[in-house]
Length: 261
Image 1: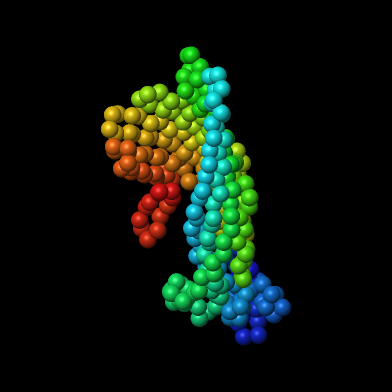
Image 2: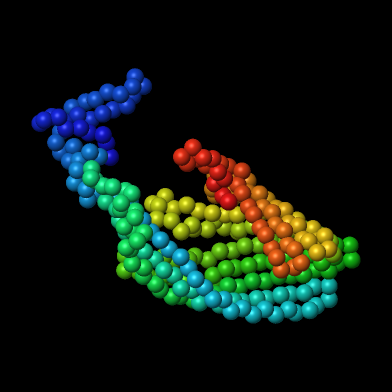
């Protein structure tokens, strides 16, 4: 869209060049087809898509271990019954649009449509016990083997599969771990420039009698969110606290905060 203004029966296009702003005369056809001002007058050309979407799931899993000499092979599978609720609305932009009122109406009056689907996850882990390198783990996990697809009246949402690999080194008092996504993953977004995510990270756990301490680092190599710091504390084996925060900061209304938290 261009910034084209109407003045009586004349039409002017605003241009930006190295010398600053300028304008040139144009036609009514150009105004009606390309003017942002004309589109806002009509009120049926541009819109903001508002969506609320959440998933509830009930997983059922099974795993089995094959014990071999110095090696244990672990295979696991889980089936998840997923219930996904979706509400979607277009807020049309015009010279009289009140975004605040439209957002409130969407939040309070928009009905939800709920659909169900089944997802299947597969995972494999190899445990290697060598004399000089005891209890090391290598695992591969494929999530959502079956593509869950939720079809609604106004849209369709598909949860695509993910592939992940990792390794760990365990001792009685500490453990080191590393894992990574093997490919980029679609993020749930209505943007035409579909964003992707691909995580890579590692960390350490220290077992200090009744307390476990976890420290780690992550990075989404498909997003500009900076390095992500993670930490956790487990007390008595059942009380667990965890936190994460990105080093890249965003800003809104004068406040700065981590993009990832």
